[in-house]
Every structure is written in C-alpha cells, then in structure tokens.
Image 1 (cartoon, rainbow, N blue to C red):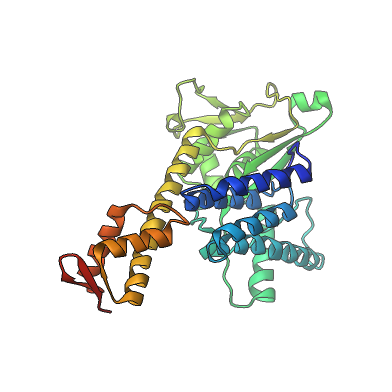
Image 2 (cartoon, rainbow, N blue to C red):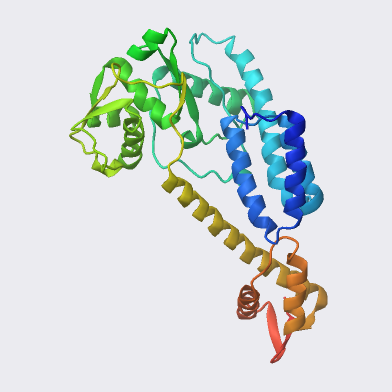
Length: 354
C-alpha cells in the first residue's frame, strides 16, 4: 500500500520471501482468494504503492501457481490500466462541455465477470453537481466511445474526498479537513450544505438510501462525533437504535481530530469477519467445482477406473492448488453417477458414459 515505510527494493525482497513461503502452502487457492480480494481493494481505493510492484507480484505468482489460475488478477490489473486511459480521454471530452465545477471525477470501469463486486443494495440520489458528471461519463462511454455498451454503477464500491473548513478546530489550525468516505457517507454529509440540522426522514428523501444502509451510514458518522444525534446515542447504541424521529446536526463546534486527512469508511471488526466468512464460503464452493471437473476430466481420459485409483488421481492433480477432501471426491462421483455421466461396472469400478 501507499505510505509504506519500506523502500521499493525492500518491498521487492519481501515479495520474493512471500513467494517462497507460498510454495510451501498446502492450500494455495485460499491464499490466492484472499490476495485477490486485497488486490481488488487496493486497485479500487487507489492505495497501491506501485503498479510495477503489483505487476511483479502477479508475475511471481504465475510462475509457481500457473497462468490459468492467475487470469483474474491479470484482467483486474489490465482493467485499471485501461481505466486510466479512459479517464484521460473523458477529461479532454469534458473540456468541450459547458459543465464548470470544482469537483474532480474519476470513473473505474471493471469487467463484471472478473471482479464479482455485486449489485448495489440500495438506490442513491447524488447531488446535482455530481450527477451531471455521472450523466456526462455515461454519454461519453456508451454513446461516443463504445456504442451499445451498458454501464452498471456500483456506488457501494465508490469513495469520495470531501474538504471542509467550516469546523472550529480547522479554522484554528487554518487548514481544512479532508474526509475520505464512501459514496453513501458523502451524499449524507452533503445534505447538510443546505442546513446545519436535518431529520431522519429529510436525509432519507434527499439521499434515496434505504433504511438499512442509511442507519449504518449515520451510525458510522456518529461514532467519530462528526454528527450529533437527538436523542443522544449512548455507548450501548447500535445502528438499529436510530428511528424516524431522530434529528442530526454536524458537530462544527466540538469535532476535533489530530489528522487533517480522516478516513471515515473503514470497515468494522464484525464486517471484516463477515467478509472473511463469505470468502471462505466461496473457496469451498470453488473447490467442489474443481473436484467435480477433475473427476470428469480423468474419467473422460481413462474411460474406466477403480475407486481408489480415481481418488488418488484426483488428489494428485489437485494437490498443487489445495488438499482435496476425500469425502468431497466421493460425493462428486455419486453426483456424476446420478446424472448418468458415470456408471458402476462393479462395486469399486466406474465407467465414463457421456
């Protein structure tokens, strides 16, 4: 990531050491899944220390894990490079537009089948200034650049930087605060440009966020005391404590932070644990699919095999990626028999039918 205290050559040494350890892992697929997840986060949030180092790590992993298994990382990296070129073209395109704004806008175009980012869980209403950029980019991309293509916006993956000198503490320091926040947090904070205090219903109507997302966002802004709530939030309160009767105000007088650049959208411990559980679930699902495909591939090649030989062949073929569970191999064989891809020749022997 950026702001690392290591020099580039030291980082490269660490990457080489990591690959050495990687070669000794029995569940390499698990490492790749979590690495891919972290890699995508760095690319989306633009926190990579160096494009060259990211590319170097992908190359190192390819050499010991296989080209086919690293396609997703390569495509992600290529998406980022193409996105930069598109944003440069969009900037030139906007020079001929009548839109004049102090906002800076960048869109990231990713391939849906590679990134697996999911759809937004809620509608969102952007402020007019920001909405005009969305509409301009959509016209640029789907009409001028790639006629017929369709964009699906993912505001839950977007992040914004808001700058404010309105806080008493920032005026004392004669320097504005920069809040790094999610798009959902940004639209909520921007509603206070038209008034220092807002009711829950007013914020919901202005932002378009559903109750679940809006309560989570408001609670994330209450924790650092950037916003104040009436009635007050206690130490035992949760996001579900917030109701339609609550009112909120920006804490202009008392909000203080030792940093001028403040990250507001970091995930809680619970959210991180849920994300890890979801990744583990995806790993197990991918393993079952890989085992199923391997059984078919082996039987299609060998035509007939006894049970122990088939299990041993599966383990041998897959152990470079992960250690397959024998019970999963047995279940896969049973499913292939039920679907009439395989048939039993005798008690311990199978024949390929399809």
